[in-house]
Image (cartoon, rainbow, N blue to C red):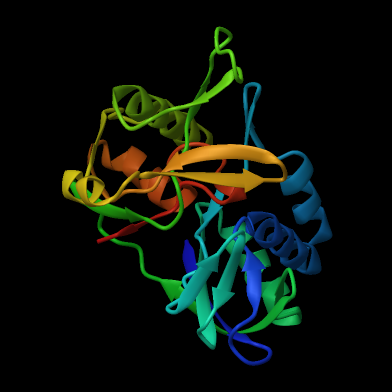
Length: 252
């Protein structure tokens, strides 16, 4: 299930938020969940859904969708009166508790910015017949443990076969957790838009989340192979760290 939340600024346009605002969005999500069900919010935050020794939250969210904005230094200035925000999960209880909490407290705080939700729109499920063209609503990230690295043992993957395979394995695990069985088809192909990448200096983006710098790919792509895995990616996010603002896509 996927929803689009539309917010209106409490005040004139022009306020600023930190460029790395994901922490504020995560806090808002758990605040709204807690207003509906403290037990569910506590479970999701502290336990999550487990497959072996791996933990998944099974939701994802987009960057803020702002029509007019300016970036200066480490700040994002909002020149629009309103903005929207997408959230998605394969778990109906997540969306249900989110909306129930939002109805009790429709305000969103990001730094010094205050905004009020005035619209909740349910997005119909797309057909997702392969091949499917997606655009990223936030970066897609996947990493491996590289003990030989001189900088950090966590190496974030660049576009290529290694990244695609890591995303495929991640989606297969989420499918197993959600459906209780392996996907009948576990193939996955991802072809990033070469025209887009040729126009941009880089198609990766560095995000600072609570002091941890995470690099992800931000580029349109076409996905083929297993429609089961692609559906899981659409619902819960492609790649890792979905519940902190990575991996959400939109069909184009």
